[in-house]
Image 1 (cartoon, rainbow over the protein chains, first blue to last red):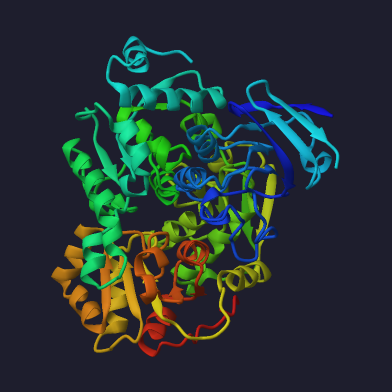
Image 2: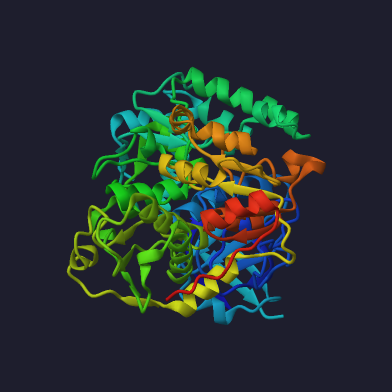
Length: 134
Length: 419
């Protein structure tokens, strides 16, 4: 299955999908030291996003998210690619600065079509998402 | 994107490598949001200590000074951390000093606060001010009517270096009307403190997707500054709201109709006792009642706040450490009032740093074995970041409950009645 989307940050990345029906912040949600979700009581608390394709709704949280993303990237603890429903400027700045391939505005509802564990390839430059069902 | 001749020179590297990289970053960001062009800034605000050194160096290379004013977010204070005996303070010294030296060389102002408006540096209605610091963005939009788009710390440095920002998002008047409306149901706010407004803002931020402007209806007009600020700055903690029209308080929102631009809200969010109670509980992340640290000043304390804390602390001795985040000028005023001494005599500390994300008492990478394993705060933003960044227990309650916790070392905070 191939889904068209809009480029936020150029590049290509692939990996197992982690799908979360909610917003995401690099600062506060993700531990730059482990690449795991670290916000207490978060639905995905303890789950790793490292080399995954993270599917979520949009960005949230502090404008420090981009420096947190930078640190996480230096530690190799970032997703391989990201797919969100609608980007926002802090998230966009974070993924552009750190070069994480990211798309938004997918033409289909990726939160329903992609399931955690599916193998997903994101070509942000071309604006495509390819999904291989697990 | 359409660029002026000067911007083209900046883009090609004629103005140096730092400006070239910063332009490339701003253009990529603008293009991802279909921005037509860049616009000049009224002034800019950065956060040099939150900025990774490698990125700081990349952006500021070849930059000597800027024609526009640049101010800064709270800085780290490793020399003060060291004086307080925090074991790992030393490891922060080198990077901080190198960036600070360049910062000073650029002629940028050492405001070192997330509440510059308390220093008399604030935008006029309509001013374009790119800035890092989501709490300042939402405050400058919602309390002063500035045009501030949501952006990150790294982008804000690029904008400060270039004196440009992409024309997008909340810079465009048509994007500033509220799409989401918050209505209060059976909530009597007459006895609310700052913490209650923090709690309300934290709930609202969680309910609004993305950074859609929101209108909050049903609060008294000309809400006291501390209350209005607590309400709006908590929103981008749980979410991404960057403009909140507090009807009757926000310059652009004298009426609900003005906030909504004459249209109907696309979504209505009702807040009642249940939502407030659940949010208050959510902000409390603790198992036993031992309090080791108290954090105030998120965002940086107003002089009134410090005055109230001094009244509560007078003649007392704290069992816990206490940090009040405040800008140097506000701290100086507190000192002239005699309030700083009262608080310091009790055992409290002032710091022109972030008491939440960069709290030196709770951050294990600053405090080492002296780390406070629990912290009480009256700020939802502080509770959120101390819990998530430092990973310690957090108590959320009123100013008075927090000062009592500092005195007794125990948490006796109570759920408000929400009557």
